[in-house]
Length: 212
Image 1 (cartoon, rainbow, N blue to C red):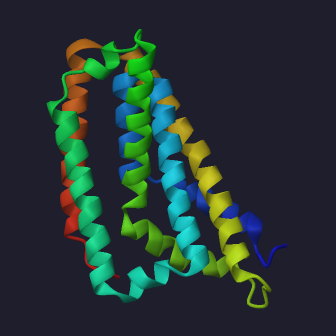
Image 2: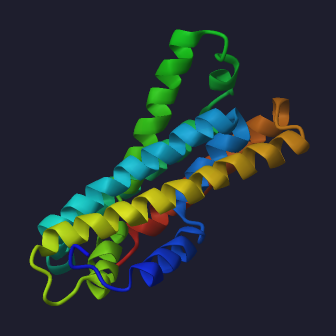
Image 3: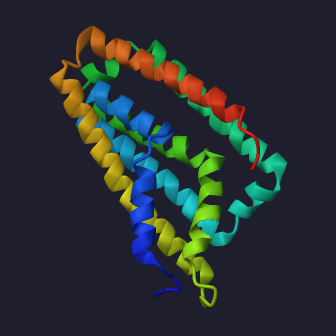
């Protein structure tokens, strides 16, 4: 089918990989815990949309450039690291005004548009995701596939959809746990500051990552 092999194994492997927490999960959980399930779901959808950037890159062979060009990898890596640090600083210095803007529909929509775009860029600017697709997907593309780019895109789409489902589960779980322990007031503020510090750390870690 579409030059794909071992699809069931691919789905199971993808689900297990998506269950492993990383910077995407950290962003989704932090938004859900501090602002609720809906904002966490928006963050999850933004991450999924960003993942499609890597799907298209893998299908078109652009991910190979990151694997072979140290300069290209460094540029994307530093851009992603700077963005993570910027998100972290913004969350750390935030005063929880986003949470209280709920009744104002226009302001709420603007806030969710920002949450979506941050989730998108958090994933799209991570070169390690591009390299992961380049290393992982070929194992499930048949050697005699007539249209290999189509097979890459199909596998990437399946992985991304499954990942979105897992991320929505992360968002729901984080919002429920936050509600159980009383996520408002000072706890929400300190939760945001903790998440902001985490993102600064993730940004520094990404900046120090060597090219593969």
